[in-house]
Amino acid sequence: MELLYKNEHSSCFNHDQSKKPMIEIVKIVKGKKGNLIISQNEIAFFLEGRFKYIFRDFPLCEAMKGQFIFLPAGGKFSYEALANSTIILFRLNNPIVLCPNFSIEKLYGIKNHSPLDQYVPKTKRFSILDINSRLWHFLDGVNDCLSDGIRCRCYFEMKSKELLLLLRAYYPKEDLYDFFFLILSEDTAFSEYVRLRWQQFHSVNELASSMNLTHKQFISRFVSVFGTTPQKWILEGRAKIVMQEIQSSRKPFKQIAIENGFASDTHFTRFCKKELGSTPTEIRERINIRERM
Image 1 (spheres, rainbow, N blue to C red):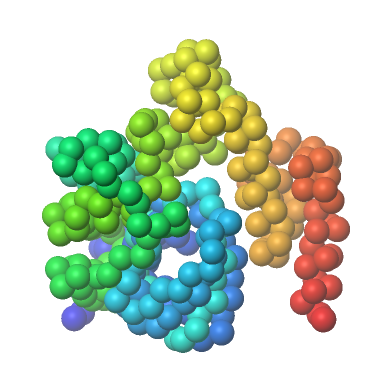
Image 2: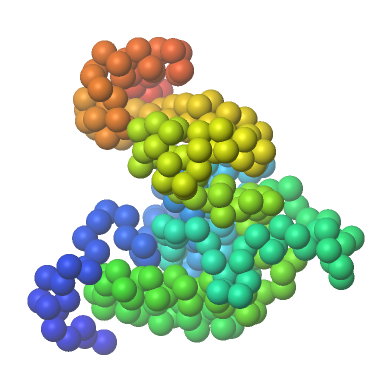
């Protein structure tokens, strides 16, 4: 169906012109391989095709048409398309809210409270769920509208909220626990705020201040949730992102340094040698050698 008033739509300030819109149709040809650092929570729905993939240090998995997976922010995702594939990708920029009266923190409690006090997760990896009939109907509509050319942020936000409500309405809490367990904690609101927004701040104090917490309060809460200090956690996260940029992109090192908040090329190189064990040039040269072999 043709989209009316295309010029008005494309010139609106809500028109999403980013390379990574909130909702996107992704087509991947058979044999295509890739490595990604997931910077925000994503839900991928497989409309066609078949994939094998590894997320973080979990075992090799496969997903195919009629299934969907959850990819939490901060993890490395490596994949290979085993068939021509079509995916609808939802990028969730904000902490996940299933519905106003059922926060995601409540899922964490299902293993401790009646009548699910004996519940044990089915898997120690992130779960794959089947797309039910209600979700297929929803996804068909989203697919049609995106194919028509809709890139409105307001539309994306409404559909993202609708998606989470459908999950709440049509999937058992046990399945949702398995699906989201990688981000669940006793303080999921705190952990999600940190994982989704830490790159926006230049220091731990700035991050703490944005949450109206003192430095001491923030450190205590962070260690309780993440099991490590914020300095170490942020350093490791920054190193993963830098390594991914060097290995998987052709960006100049100066651009990578600027985008990741380094004050100078020298500072960037020093960081790579200390945290990654090699200079940016050495890392990329090794990749080039492997590709030529």
